[in-house]
Length: 273
Image 1 (tube, rainbow, N blue to C red):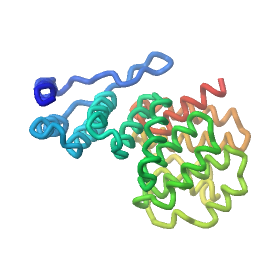
Image 2 (cartoon, rainbow, N blue to C red; image 1 turned 90 degrees about the vertical axis):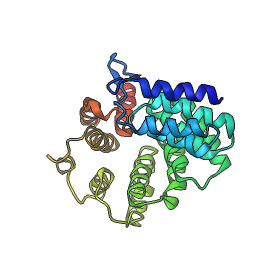
Image 3 (spheres, rainbow, N blue to C red; image 1 turned 180 degrees about the vertical axis):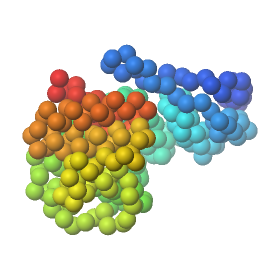
Image 4 (cartoon, rainbow, N blue to C red; image 1 turned 120 degrees about the horizontal axis):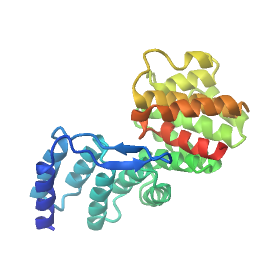
């Protein structure tokens, strides 16, 4: 094991900074790649070489890889960790998340489900399980997962996210009255200004659809997230044509390809084709 990890660390150190691996190919053949390592991956790999069975260092390497969109490499790292600690719910949480990033939905769901059985107190397991179920069209199951995650959200941003996705899940499951009642309780009372906050303002009628995406929203993931929210909102309202317009805008934000809005928009367009 030690020899193999030394080899991996050496390869990481020897890889040119500009090298970028293919992570995902879209239906149209577009290739989406990782970013260049600026040193974080190399440092984490070196630290792991010195202590190859340390699960915390395995997690650190996987997170560093994911930080530069090396999702396939991160999956391999978390898998090595699970060979050492097969009941580690955090490893399952992160591997499931990264299977989701590269559209391996069945594997993502299996990891996240397994993780919730080991440690149901981990917010990220429920949140990402909800995303997987939503993308697969299981809106009732998605709502159940987000309802589990919402009360244990670790910060204001995650609370906005789980509240947003819970509203969408309930709405798509035909439970609009419950969705409205949930928002009326203001469970997302912690203040933060992010894409989910902007979408929730739309759901509550505080802003119009035209005000959701602003000139300041230029980052790929931000655009993909906001555009998907608008598409879903129109779909809930029964306006399929405008929904498709916004889903297309979401997937046109090429740099936003790992974002859940981008992934969900891909699936919605496939269903509406």
